[in-house]
Image 1 (cartoon, protein in one colour):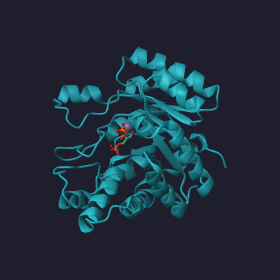
Image 2: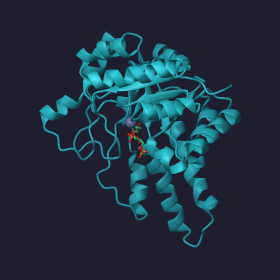
Image 3: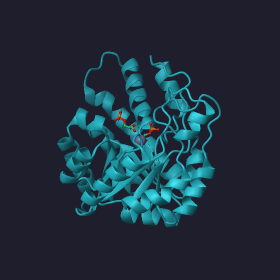
Image 4: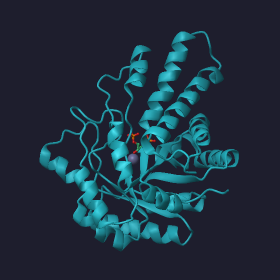
Length: 309
Ligand code: G3H
Ligand code: 13P
Ligand code: ZN
């Protein structure tokens, strides 16, 4: 099976009340760790590449590694551009064989976001590629927000119908209180399910995307802290909130930080317990297995997409 788009995956996820995991990939071990979990659980996968990943690993290497994952696993796998910033970045990924791209115009005005997204959609659809866009702005972890500026970052449901109609976009990322990184909430985690519900009512049968959805498991944070790291106060999105979102119109849930914490925590532990070792295969093996463990947990217990390949 070649790389696939999200079209069929999202239709099934929407109807089945579950979500597909979109995991960020930066190197071979992370890709292998995720794909092992997909194989063990017969789950569809979205492997996504950010601008930072493209810069770090070279897009050609990542593309070939993801193609190897498809060949090795036989699973339905989407190769997705995460947070594409310009038409040119999206075009470059489409031209090189990505099956899905995100154009993130959320920092632009509504009109500009529509114009850029529409341009990407036209180029992508002519080539059989699907497009995700974003409306609303995810809070940065360090943002000092008062209530009114915090409110202005949430997606405005009254804008979504016009945005989707004018752009022809295939899925929409919305801001309901999640944020990127490992430090998401200073006090009680809270998501605006009222916004998600209203968007779902206004856009029936339309796939919604949730970014910033790592849960930051405390056992992994503890591991990092115990072996020389410093992540006090790290806090993610509780998994029961993600399960609730997946049962609604959310069809794609983006997870990166959890994989980073699992990977790094295990490398720190291994090196701390085996300070004389210097063969990268020795410390990368447990790190890769930790990715498989956490992704399996997400597929089975959070996303609900195990067995859906
Ligand atoms: O949304 C951001 C992802 O976690 C990717 O992060 O830009 O550091 O690769 P990155
Ligand atoms: P996390 O930082 O919560 O893992 O979010 C990742 C993400 O949204 C990638 O686009
Ligand atoms: Zn994101």
